[in-house]
Image (cartoon, rainbow, N blue to C red):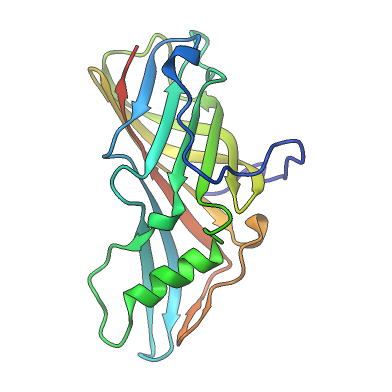
Length: 215
């Protein structure tokens, strides 16, 4: 998956420091989906474990209930202005089985430091357009989709396209959407330290959104 049209938007406000949950009443379009605890964001980083002389992959994810916000689609397939999702970054934690000789607590703490979660507690995504969904959306189905919008991490906003699939089963919607992002594009220092170093100048962000229709 690739990052597309990755340009900074100087007019976009910095990422919020607390979860954003716009009221569904502010959404002018229907349907409206609210994030539920099953929604997660996953971060994947290729790394070299120097202390073990082996390559590995760091897999981190947000905690249950760490995603908040609403998504609403207009009849023309664009997103209502109320659409916004926020992920709590201070809850990122390793989801792999422990590797001998490596402290995952240290890895999780290092990730929090890199993302500067003390000053930027959330990553925020404002979806704007999508390609692949036909409105009105069928009550049940699975579709390939690309969703483009503004992603803010560490106070830096970029236009990003996530690609993958969206499924709808009645009033529930889930996604499996990914984009590969460069550390430098979000002013994230190259991960390195404690015998572990990133072997790529990028990381993969996967949005496993889960939402319940509220209107």
